[in-house]
Amino acid sequence: MLKTTLQNRLITIMVVFSLFFIVAFTAIQVANQSNSITLLNIYRSKIGAFVAKTAFETTFSKAAPSAADSASFTRALELTISTLKESEIIEKVSVMSKDGDMIVSSEALDQDLPPMRDRNQLE
Image (cartoon, helix red, strand yellow):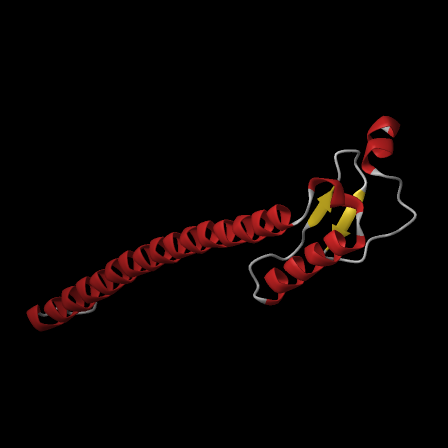
């Protein structure tokens, strides 16, 4: 039979409580760090949305209302999208007309897909 002396019991209790406190404080730190990262990501998404909204509003306000199909308007949208994509504010974006036709996109899409209005009728 194993003899448990007072010294062995005290060492065991100290080790157990030390491990308990280490695990508890680590869990608290992980929770706090996760909360901080979540708040930072929320802040970054709000700022990114504001920057993208402002950039598109500026592009739309500079273009004449009748110039929605013009090459200069399309080029201005492409420039705005490429700038936002290079600064990693957006990843994917597509600008579509009221008719459902794609005006410009950040990615090369399949050209043989029907316009959005036709795809909605197919479903």
